[in-house]
Amino acid sequence: MKHGKKYNDSAKLIETGKLYDVDEAVAVAVKTGTAKFDETVEIHVRLGVDSRHADQQVRGAVVLPNGTGKTVRALVFAKGDKADAAKEAGADYVGAEELVAKIQNENWLDFDVVIATPDMMGVVGRLGKVLGPRGLMPTPKAGTVTPDVEKAVTEAKAGKIEYRLDKTNIIHCPIGKVSFGPEKLKENLDALMGAIVKAKPAATKGQYIKSCVVATTMGPGIKLNVAKFGA
Image (cartoon, rainbow, N blue to C red; front, side, top):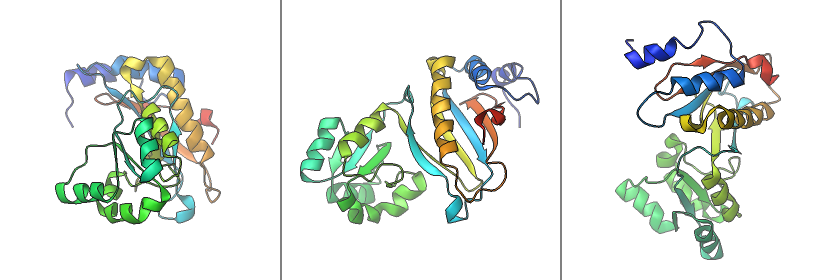
């Protein structure tokens, strides 16, 4: 694969074969973010689990201390008092069956997170084929199926992210923007990795965190020393 000049210049900042400590890795990542837009910094964590087994699933959510740098549009399925509470908390869209119809009929997807009260899940379930593949289906584990919609909306707006394994046993998550600077990115990375380590399934054998790479949207990957995470 052929890379452009900016990518190649960024790659020169990274020592081949070196495993970086978190502080150094985020500092280098910031230097590699040279695009004209504020690049997202992402983390890719390969785990020593098998996602095909239910008892080895790793999934959850964590509020990043410094947010994601992205404006989050929250859609809430709720009725009555809960709908009012969601609006008060700053939800962008609140409704019930009419929003299900809008998504089904108009392919409307102008939102980043979906929250639902437990009593609405029978209705929201109809959207499984649309929301599921996009990682938008509300779940109790991620705190997006909850009677406390106010808290869920507030957390989503504050920078709560969901982490989950893909089919290759890798978790991909944003930890902020290049403009955050190394310190804030490190705090976010530490919070996310702490949550992933805590979510280690009891059925896991051998090394849990196999590898961890930090990269900006357009930049090369920087490998972390995973021994520091103690898992």
